[in-house]
Length: 128
Image (cartoon, rainbow, N blue to C red):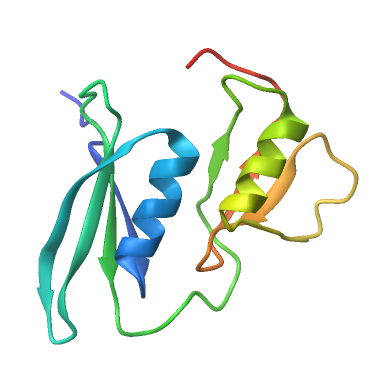
């Protein structure tokens, strides 16, 4: 027997904004909003691929504010319908910011989402 990953929870201070950002980045859709009930109010947003694949990213409001240190887990993404430079332009227009984590001269770009979570834009184009 083994287990399967079905969800990647991400702590955040603005679940709706982060869900919108990542849904645009990945070409996914927001499937649920406001499911999390906290002292802050109704929060939480979930995104999933449009093909119904059994995996989602779950954005959860937390009271501790944006992240304060380097991620110990991050996403690597690859462009599907354009080259790396064009995808970098698109991601920056969506609100991603370049980040220097000491990577030096590499073939990928280290970026941060609107709440500072690092991710990498890799060079190779992959099938959607």
